[in-house]
Image (tube, rainbow, N blue to C red; front, side, top):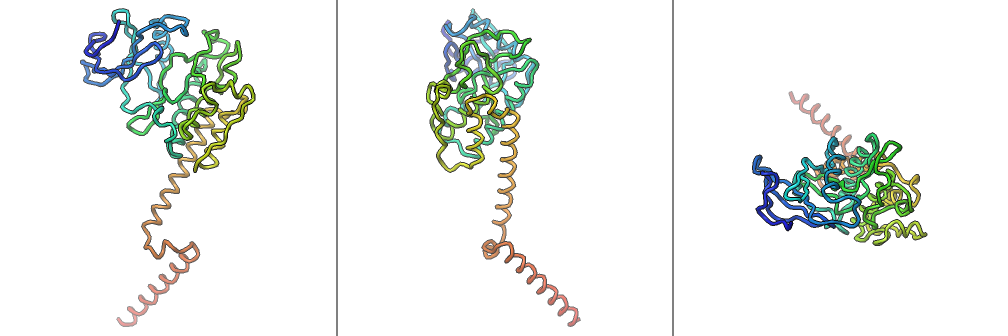
Length: 317
């Protein structure tokens, strides 16, 4: 079925216009006629040879997998519906756009924010029981919200890991440019560190303008390719963290919790520095040019002058 504007799903969601297309799905902006809210509808409009199940089962599986998840940096489906054989997921509409448009434009401040927000979401997923691995962290699956927060979306190939997990034999799906070296090993399963690699590759691309290992991703690293150093006026701390995320061996990468902690600390330091700079800007211009010792001397001189003025006033009285 070919979707078009004004189509109504579930008796309440009226399609307005298309927001984007994927391999076998389309995302539409929709109007919820019952609540008046803007929603996003991800609709399965074809078949994909990559999927081991048909789109309806794939969408139902994604909805079931994420049903009990709640996190401020995850964009999660709220309902599953099949309309005239077209499966769809209903999601909150995020007014922000995909981070893919930011390639080569992300500032250091925004890079730290993205690392903090998405690592926070990944840490939450990795601490589920059994743990969840997103498997497809990339610029196109990160949305920049209007409130300044970054959101991780699309759980179509998210997998449970561990002895009790089901579906471990699923094909290694994902986007090669952001996939870690171990993801290309036949018979392997994703690990938590695979998501950290993908986050590192994403931020590398968004601040440099190109993916770290081209379209082949971690397979080039697996075959001996070297990571090109990040160019540009970025701090050594940011470069080092991204390089660690892109380590060839999974055990050399930081955990999502560590990435979140480092990013949070750096944002706090930058906030403190900004406050100090603003405080200096409020000083008279001649004081802002003095160093700390000169300001101390100036303060004592002002205090002495004030004491002399007070004594003089008392004497006159």
